[in-house]
Length: 219
View (spheres, rainbow, N blue to C red):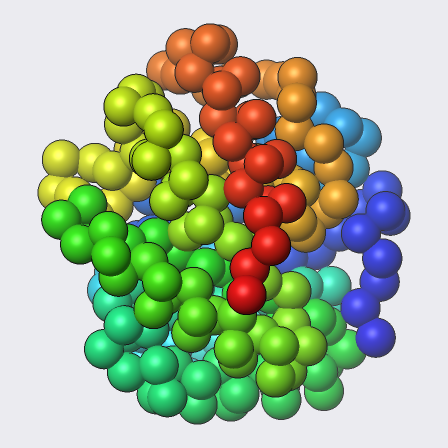
């Protein structure tokens, strides 16, 4: 059974691709958590463009889960697979969930966002993550929902990078704040430090967006 998030030290394994690696999401989350008195130890297994099935077939991620004594394992699926083949995504998550449970950890699903040129696909992404999350009783971190609501009301700071897919630093910061709320149960409002490349005013609005986005009922 996973240990509670209110402990002073938590160990997390992130499994994903550049959506997790870009701007060092695990490290940013650890910095924000430390400001609230929670120590986050983190490891990352990332391959550019990889699906969870690719990670499963490679074997490294499963081995890390079995031997790493993690409290949580965060799974980030290839960004378009939930839209193209939600059934396949669910199969991938189930494979990992069995190993995660056997290792005494808790499965966490990192819900990502729609590409800038296809905002309508967010509903399919949201549904895919929430459906498998409910089935296996995983923690779903609704980053995509927070992005969706922020983009509906704000033009800046930009969340998508120039490619319209990957996150800017602001996008990753918003993701980290949603993790802070959903996984660690920590209020992001007023948390420091702010990355030097991010304007303090932008950090403030993103903290509020994370808190509001994480609270939205997700059917």
